[in-house]
Amino acid sequence: MTKTPEDYGQTPLPVSGVALTSFLTLYCHMIDAQSKDPILNDTRSVEIATTLDTMLAGTEDDLARILLARRIRPSLMNHIAMRAKRYDEYIREFLSRFPDGVVVNIGCGLDSRFARIDNGKVQYYDLDLPGIMAIRRQFFEETDRYHTITSSVLNFSWMDTISGHRGPFLFLAEGVFMYLYQEDVRALVLELRKRFPGSELVCEVVNSRWLRGPYKRMMNYKIRKQLHFGKDVTYHSGLSSTREMEEWGSGIRFLDDWSYLDSYQNSLGWLKVFRHVGFIRYTQWTVHYRLG
Picture 1 (cartoon, helix red, strand yellow):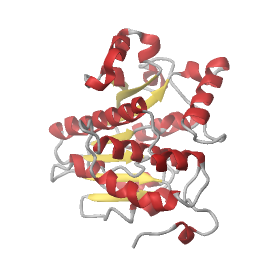
Picture 2 (cartoon, one colour):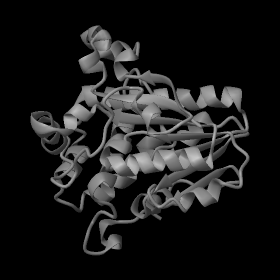
Picture 3 (tube, helix red, strand yellow):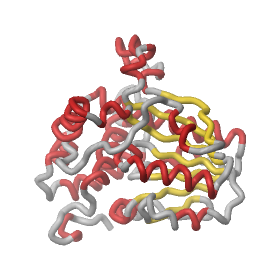
Picture 4 (cartoon, one colour):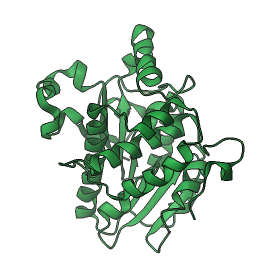
């Protein structure tokens, strides 16, 4: 049964702050799926977004109004869809090597990634905060290979849930780490290295120059005025270079990286010329590491 805003009490939305970024991601997937030439074609997002419309209709939140009106910039929608497509590819590449491996999607939001990558053997875990997982339960049911974990990624006890598997393990963090503090990201990576040696990590990062001085003010303007995420949402962590995590501890090895400018989607247009300009390519991008 679809819930209405009143079902959530005085506050129409069961999530706030950084968790609301998952709503924007979902609506980008939905708009892409309904376009003439979809990049990701996440058709399940259409059903979920239609239900979320009911929740969003009961709030005066700026982001909610934008999502309801479908006023998302095409460039942002394309970026989000290309990113999700590349993360799907990372999983497929991993499963081509380890068909019965374990995949953990950190900060899963409302994505239906398991349905897109399921090879019939993978053990798959979606992890996110209670508010998001409460919404997910309306649309996704656990099975013997699809599992959910309701937890902050920084409460390391969630790792106990997956420690019974032999692995290998692939951890993904799409649009998550930049909202965490640097010391927390580092502690998380080192804990994964310790408990799951040989695992792989794919995560999106922001260049640490955007965390200081005028760059920080520019980034906050984008987050709060263009994306409408609210005054309490900002970036707290980043990397100075694509291989920086190798310096965090022994055995951490850089494998490759990816920027949406690397995509060959026609929707990139003239922006493709910037894929070889380091300052632009390495503003916000994805890194792939082996841990231990």
